[in-house]
Image (cartoon, rainbow, N blue to C red):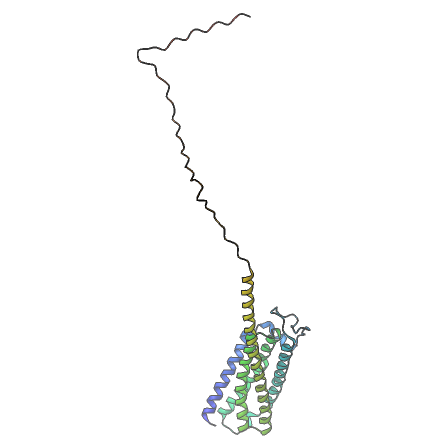
Amino acid sequence: MNPNHIFSSFGLCSLLWSATAFGQSAAPPAATPAAHASPQYSAQGTPAGSAPGGPVSYASVTQLNGLLGQLEATSKTTQADLAKLRIDRWKTDASSKKQALGNVDSIQRNLQNALPEMLAQLRNAPEDLPATFKLYRNLDALYDVVGSVVESTGAFGSKDDFQSLSNDLSSFEGTRKQLAERLENLTASKEQEIVRLRTDLKTAQAAIPAAPPKKIVVDDNEPAKKPVVKKKLVAKKPASAAPGTTAPAQPPSAPPKPQ
């Protein structure tokens, strides 16, 4: 087998391992049980019990349910087709067989662990952009690694295995394209919503009446008031007698009259 093909397959396998680890670390632990049960949606398209984030249109939820259902069906079919492979019987060297087995193991772990958690996150928040992009990125990694296994199966495996895995790969590709279109539409919708909210904010700010400025009236004809001068109180000294004179004696008081 061509050594370049071996190194390319190893790089694709590493990419898928990274995507699997990213999905497992970013997803909350509580989201795992939800991957096996489809939540009920209200008439407005809002998932029951989901976090408040504004109403979601029924058309958007219907589109998402179709994508996720198709992806789940492809995942089950791919896992079954991979389990049928007899890589140990391929007419190739041991290194190529080991690489193919590693790719198959990575795909299986991604489809069984990382992918269901991402689907659960989108069911809880149908129009969440980070969750949508994370799923799209994982599909990119899956498509590359599954494509590598399909190529190796076509070279060393049976025609039936090659045809089955080729169909799985085409299904992944179709879902990936639809998810890319949804991601683009959601981004444009969120951008329009931001522009509308900014316009509404400016309109609300313009409608608030401004307080009139206080007027200060100055009368030039009014005479200026003189400042009040406070007088200091000076204590008066008692008058002193002239030198050489004596103060007149006080006459004796009259005795009281008998009753």
